[in-house]
Amino acid sequence: MTDSSMARRAPELRDWLKTLHDSDRLCIIQPGTELKHTIAGIANRMDGTKATAFPDAGGTGITVISGLLSDRSWMAEALGVKSSELVKAFQRAAASPLPWHQVDNAACQQIIVEDGDLLGRLPIPVHNEFDSGSYITAGLLIARNPRTGIQNVAIHRLQVSGPRELGVLLLPRHTLAFFNEAESTGADLDVAIVVGCSPSCLMASQAILPIDHDELEVAGALNGTPLAVTKCIGSEIRVPADAEIVIEGRLLAQKRAPEGPFGEFPQYYGERAERHVIAVDRITHRENPLFHTIVGGALEHLLLGALPREATILSTIQASFSNVKAVHLTLGGVGRYHLVVQLQKRNRGEAKNIIAAAFAAHYDIKHVVVVDEDVDIYDERSVAWAIATRFQADRDVIIIGGAQGSKLDPSTDDGFGSKMGLDATVPFGAPEFKFTKIRVPGEMEIDLDTVIAPHAELSAIL
Image (cartoon, rainbow, N blue to C red; front, side, top):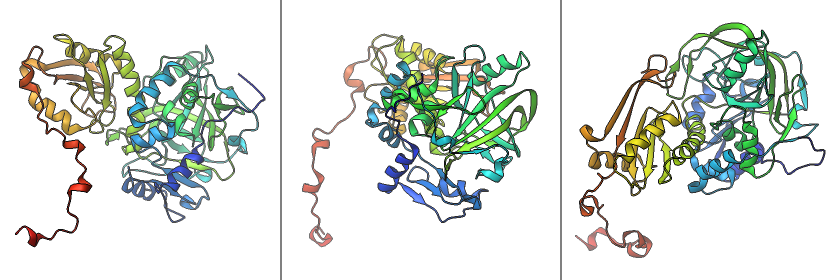
């Protein structure tokens, strides 16, 4: 919808950077950092503790930023919720999206470049050792359904293959469905790539939604107000008005070219293969834009994929099992493959049904562990304890062979593999005392500051 009045806009990327800086969570690096490997190396060294900013990266005059959402608590803070409410907030936003609000004279179109080449204009890094070249890794690729006109937003890896050409890995999701629809008629598919946007847009881009649901509307719901968008110059695609950089182009029908290898979230390389191609038509950007890059396999990469999946998976499972309390995609499982489910157990065999429901919720899930309410699903040691003391392999394991999995899991045959579920809940009908966790009464209420003798000498006790 279009409205000439100014709605309250979603929090901008620059506001979040200021928050990080003011709380000593942003490290500003000396100007001129080398684009090949050095930016990624520094960002990795700071991963999870501080975001990084690289002024005049590679001598381009543009600042590269990374690590903006490399902690779950940062994600919650960026949305204005408690960490414990993060998944629920995302569930609510995905269930009740807000239509966007269109504006003119958007910041993302302050500068229009019709003929500039990608590497001559933008500071696009090379991350890992065997990456095939420079990659745009934090670009929100936006496309429209050729039949309905409804948008999809996702992050795809984008290899700089030429001055005005990008190679793109399209997995079997909505962007590929839109392209296949267009290509079947011989047409290209218009796309826009947004680099540098608000934390809510970044998180919303990873929402797992049915086809023909625009993730930019989820971004609006995350903020409680419609997102300000603007129309691209060369297409009907709408992009966040406050974005830093927008690359307009077309996914080319009947054209494929080599793409990869590239260091992916499983912390292995996605192989080189013939893949889809984007022709770049123009670049628009703010004055003095910021270029966001996500280092492959770093915490920002893992967490951005994990949180939205947790919200969707939880909603899917709770539709049949209301006694499922929470789910967690572990970092040890690269934020995609290992799911822990917390259950208030009611019936014999229920945990195994929930394992089946989890596998149906997303094909990337490879291993599922179901635990009781007394297990902290965010603490991998606590989960391992439940497996060690409540699980028996001949009784509590489910193995499914010949299943669809992640194509980026190198242990599969191009995504064809197996899955395993572990029921690590207390056996149904077991005597209550047998599985009662040990506890020291009053332990957590002790005020350590009042009981520690701060100036005591060892000689007093020897």
